[in-house]
Structures are given as structure tokens and as C-alpha cells.
Amino acid sequence: MIEIINIMPNLDIKILNQVKKLYNKYLVTKSLVKIVNTTPNIAPKAFNALQALFNDPIENFKCEAVSVLVEIVKAKPSLVKEALNILKTLIRNA
Image (cartoon, rainbow, N blue to C red; front, side, top):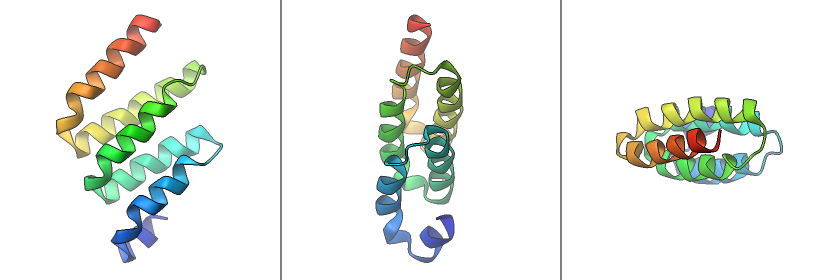
């Protein structure tokens, strides 16, 4: 997947859209990190995809998603405010 993006960068959004459709949410989160690390400009779209995953009731998954959130913010620091809002909501609902 990453090799495809490296060879054909214009496919990054299409690959991201396919990754979002995966059933295994752990695989989705790991893939989001790799995509963002390869193509940092896609971080806002990956951030939106990750936001949708935070509604999952599985607590262990939320911990994994938070670590991905950190990686996305590293790639796109302008998302830090939105990321903090997500973290506040998660803490309030814990």
C-alpha cells in the first residue's frame, strides 16, 4: 500500500478511502499512521477517518486510536486543537 503511494502519490486519497472500509479497526488505525507518515498532507482526511472510529465501544481500541491521533498531529500540527477536543471527550466519557 505504501509502495503504491510512493510510486503514484495521486492515489493516496483513494487508498485512504479503501482503508476506511476495512472491517478490522486495528488494521485501519495502523494503516492510517503509515499513510500519514508517507503523505503528511493527507493528515486532515486521516484525522476525519479516525474521528469516526472513536465511537467504537471497545476500550482497548480507543487506546490504539489515541496513539494514532498523536501520529496524525505530529504530521499536521494544525490539528492539535481538534485532537485535544477528542481527548477531552474521551476522558469525560471514561
